Picture 1 (cartoon, rainbow, N blue to C red):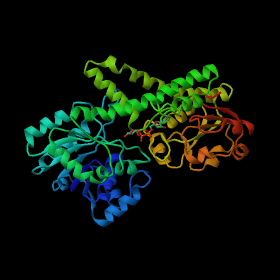
Picture 2: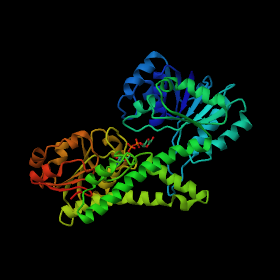
Picture 3: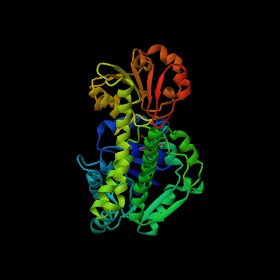
Picture 4: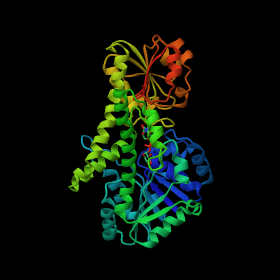
Length: 433
Ligand code: UDX
């Protein structure tokens, strides 16, 4: 099929490349000239394992092109809207200006029978509003909502082999067109849920709210564990064996961040308030509050480990991204902890395998190094806040020879407390005795 993807950020760049990988003829559109130039040259403007390979092969084959001119999308049968819906500053609500601008700019270029497919995460009701706009100004085109569940770090695999496909449609032919696009996944047995617009929009925010709730639940348990001498990791293992609960997303630590979970639960809460249903989603405010409290707990543990003050003490912060296998520092708990410690007068040196460039842009006041050794050297305290493989594999003896004080806060509960304590370290995790 001939496909356009409007918006070439994390979601759109991966989606465009994956659709070309499936054999479709794809054009990626974005207003950002630098981003388009990089993508057209086969270089993703962000770190995502597996993306450089499929982007390079798709651009070389001629199946994938990029442009800043929306008119170049006119030939496509299907147009995916993959622009961002960031948080409105000072409010929890989603900013729909990019969705609306992309949609409006596309309207004059919609051919006979074209299908517009929303992928962006939007407040429930958005698709119905855009559909009525189509009925008024482009009645020859139709709309579907097809939320995306990809995880950063696994985005290519999640797009090519999704857990499920969700279509919010108002007519059968829209579902048939999406079936043609996703034929490979459907033939591989991927479950497909065909529903209405509102349900499709809600599936996305409900899934992310559930995941966020699961993380905050276990983080709340970690607070109880700390107060009672219990071990939250053993607790998670034990409750996780119940198939109804499941072990995944029960890792206590510094909490969730990134471009989706934090903003999605806030936008969902704001939308519920608009619908007069604020009480129904009141618990998501608590989920957010527990999550933010975890960052404070890590900072408090750091100060405690340093005997009450971080002033002029060198602290090595391991990790700045919101999770491993990503260079994304949006709403990163790791970076937030580093900034707070710096604000308390510490000499913070942060390191990360992929995130330093983005971190520098946001927080130029911090010191960064790409070398874990340099970060550790002469540090009074080590704070592990993103569980990159190389930090999990640190040897306590070797690290101990570099630092000035053997103190470590394991903000992701990924190190073995017994091994670190045996090497003479003061070890503190979250909810671990
Ligand atoms: C998430 C959803 O998983 C994905 O389906 C959706 O499409 C977009 O949002 P992503 O933001 O890439 O994906 O990250 P994810 O792997 O879900 O992790 C989110 C955050 O939760 C990270 O900061 C991670 O460190 C944290 N997390 C995850 C925990 O603190 N504990 C856990 O047990 C799991």
